[in-house]
Image 1 (cartoon, rainbow, N blue to C red):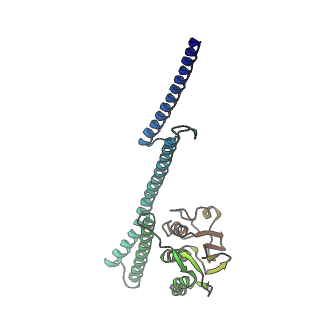
Image 2 (cartoon, rainbow, N blue to C red):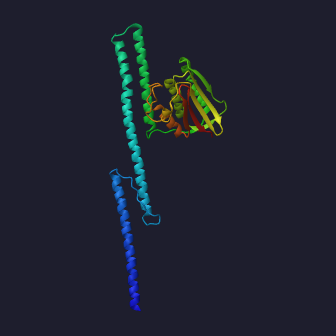
Image 3 (tube, rainbow, N blue to C red):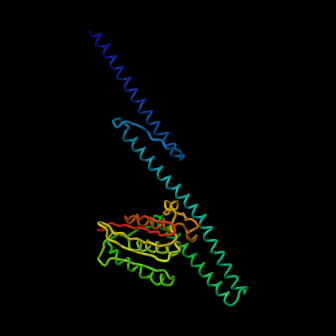
Length: 305
């Protein structure tokens, strides 16, 4: 009887030892897998994740490692995207700055060296002045883009009366519309409309959209209409210009994207990307509708508070 008991005990101990060894080998395997994943992370070459059941001993550790790997890959992708964007910006900068700068210097040299005289000289100086403004506008947009995508940029979003703010922004554009013989229709409600926005950011948005009409649309009329629709405020900036093709519409807010030759070639390809980014950071939305040779309308929406 005692011998039988000892045999059973030894068998049980053997099975227990075997089970423990299996568990140890399993844990060792998982540790090796995690080590391999971390080694691959170190050399920037992994998209692996360790698989494990919720009930296993190492589950918390493996989940934490997977989270670290995921965060690392996401950050790496952001850096690679930013690096590619910066390369594109530098290429764009070398072309879009050099061209007006070369023209500017050429006209100024001709005027300075007496190659042109009288009325023609005045025209050369005026052309040089316009090129200087184009160059300043382009550099301002580039500055806005880099500032918007830096860690130093922040918006002070707070309760703001958007109707009166919009009137204040647009009153400075009326002399410009008149100078350019551009018909305008501005409709802003008289009642108070409170939304959460950053005043300077919103001003930049409206100015960008109006400038976009002036620079690219070849329009005869611009309409800026604000409406209170249920729980939100809608601002529509519309023109009767050349319009935007369907192919261009789906890319219109992408950075460095420029529309076809039907619209003006001037511009950095960043203005509308900056506009959308500012609006979204303030919790709003922007969309665009257009029909070639008929109209283009940008539609901004903010929730009322």
